[in-house]
Image (cartoon, rainbow, N blue to C red; front, side, top):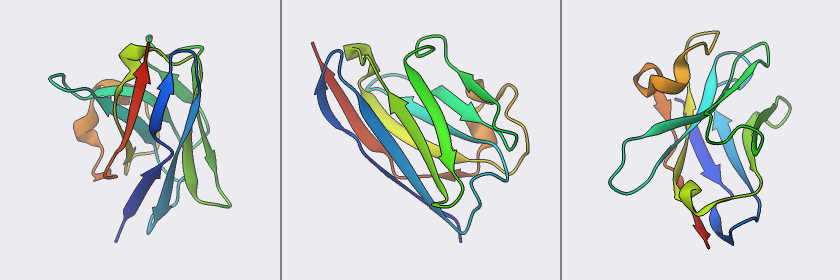
Length: 126
């Protein structure tokens, strides 16, 4: 049984940083494509970042240069380092795990990911 547990969310001021973690069980983080998605109130879920089994990463234009996705194979954990946070980054952030090897195009297709965490809230104040 696959379980994804996110942590690390919180409230910060604009310009601050947070690091989200997604601890996986029943799933190996470097075996398939994984990603981070977010959903703000009243908006659709959007892709933030993905990483595939070769370590290739992809980012939404809105977070490029500010966010970094990474994984720790020993801890079997996915991370999202978020720097220079903006109020528009406020959302519930979800970890997603796929069953396909490469993430190409996956930022825009959340339906491809069969496994999801419960989410962690990030709130950025101006």
